[in-house]
Picture (cartoon, one colour):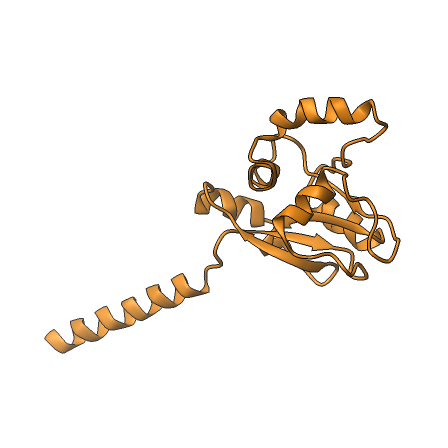
Length: 160
């Protein structure tokens, strides 16, 4: 009888460890149009692109970054990684840029909208939860998400 309990314990442990290994780590994927080339996967490069300080590729094509809404958790996390402040903290920056004729990146309402826009727009780049990435876009960079619970990440992974 004792060995049966031991076997049950080992089977349960194997299933638990297998499920933990299969569960993806929460991550944010920077995605681009499949044809977009020549963008270095570095945070300082992304910060320049999303601040609209770099607006063309090395080959002369336009760069078209897009954002999620200000309150979206992925936008908040990316803003902290790139700019070391929340999206609301970027307001003064964008007010100054406006007087130079530079507008912030357009805001799309959902991750699915970002995926569709990036797929259809040459030069486009955006961001989604890594679990939402599919063959329509190319992954430029993956950033680990800190400060987001597994439950909140699971919500971001749900398809509409």
